[in-house]
Structure formats: structure tokens, C-alpha cells
Image 1 (cartoon, rainbow, N blue to C red):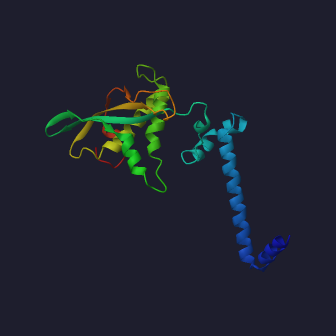
Image 2 (spheres, rainbow, N blue to C red):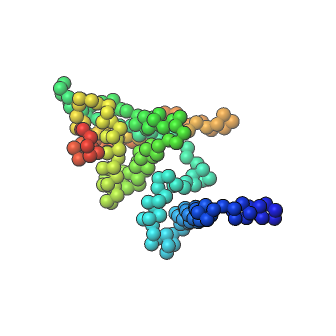
Image 3 (cartoon, one colour):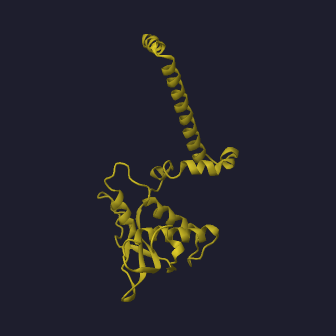
Length: 218
């Protein structure tokens, strides 16, 4: 009670401008908190009238900084490590050649490791690959428009990573693959898993000038 009265006394001693500024700031913060909590709730809650009507606005606000993921509490947590590799067919003065596979995921991880506020760019490949596998059949044929669009998306993401690797050469085609390795079992477990990676290769994709960001050099 004493602390409350003391706080009121200090507030009353403020100038009119300071009181107005304090009240407005508190109101804005309160509104932002309500909006944020409400958006996260609607993003996680089962589909309803409100979330369906404002789905696009909610999704734009949540992604990518505030995406919620329940896999930590899933009955079966992730048990594999997956990396995306890429190679290119490049043309230069000595003709056309195919490069070695480049671990693009490792490059992304190295660029964010040790940063206090790391970039979310490494999620581009991870989420892009997940969308690709969900929108293509076993013959790598797109099932819908999302499948066709995600091919363009993945290709452009990889080209942004590779464009600085081959100076003086033009990238004619690009190919992606995933490398999947089982997470080792803990020491106390009697179960043993193979540490040999398995690969899933995608078809070669042709590259054109339109596949590069505006203002960049192919």
C-alpha cells in the first residue's frame, strides 16, 4: 500500500507533458503486447473464423521471427541431421565443367555461428526443402502450383549462395541434393544406427538471367 501511494506521489510530481508521455507509452506497449499475444494464439490455435479471415495478415506478422514449433515436445523428436548440397554446371574460357558438391547448409551455419543475433537465412533452405518434398511426387514432379513455385525459390536461394563461388564463369545449370544422417544414439542406449549418409538428388535445373536477384551479375 505504501509503495502504491509512493508511486502515485511520484507520478503526480511529474509535469503534464511527462504524465501524458508516460500514459501514452504505457498504452502503446499494452496494445502491442495484446496484438502480439493474440497473433501468436491465433497462429497456434485450431482453425477458426477469426484465424481464417485474417490468415494472411497473421502469417505475415508471425513469420519468420515468431514462428512457434512444438517439435521439442513431440513424442518423436527429430532424429536426423539434414544438409542441402548443390553443384553447378559452369561455362568459362576452358569450356563447360561440373563443379564438386558444395555443402550449402554448412556455409549458412558457419555464417551465423557465434553471432549474438544470427540471421534467419539458414531457414530458407530448410523450409524450402521441406516444402519441396511435400509438394512433389516420387518422380520429382510437382503436384500443384506450390511445387512449381518452390522449385524457382530453391534455385534462386542456392544461386545467391553460389554466385560468388565461380567468378569469371557463368552458371548454366544447378542441381541440389539432400544429405541425411541419423543422429547417434546416446552412450547408454543399446541401439546402434548407421552413420552413413543417404542422399536424395533432384534433377538438373537450367539457369537464366531471371533467376538472379535484380542488379546482380550472373
